[in-house]
Length: 266
Image (cartoon, rainbow, N blue to C red; front, top):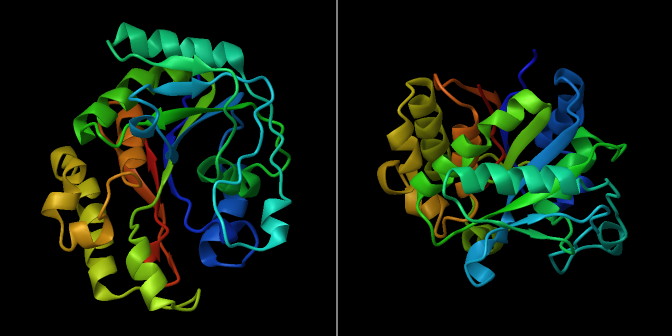
């Protein structure tokens, strides 16, 4: 029986769907390196239960719409669609799995796929022929809660489901907009010091350090003034199962300040 890895993707700017970059090139080749899943579960930083009255949800639409949850970008980006089918049966399975671990989640039959899901998936699986469901984070919950969420989802890896956490290994939009660096600008030390520390702690299997990297790593709060974009990393880590094994598949930066690290677990 094959077992899929769990993945963490740094999805960067929505413009990755259009602009050449090392991260875009890597993601465009990633699908060919993986066993083809029967379905994909994406835990996206842009689907946040903290802003839904605390109600964690999983998408259950048989045909989830493409959500353009951004502004100020070219019309070409708003014209893009990712018409992957949904999987209501998988959504029900996720509700069941999480309930068995005391984690409450409800199925949402209407919500579609936000750009944290469809932008990277449009590169990895451009045919949009693999069913996709999305599960929310909860930015008001702890790193440990998200790690436990991933642990509860780990059995899906034996059911031909690819579990993907989609966020960003660094995410300070205020600094990004203030700096206005070109897309190929090198990352400054305050970004690379953080990402290198995380990579080192991953290699050492220091799960607690990674879960609390915002507090413990160099420049942690500079790179994550809010926790939303690092929380999907912790879900992917938990879904990787035991013993803990992490591999950094890709490392680059766009606009200098958005590190685009990709990790595989398990």
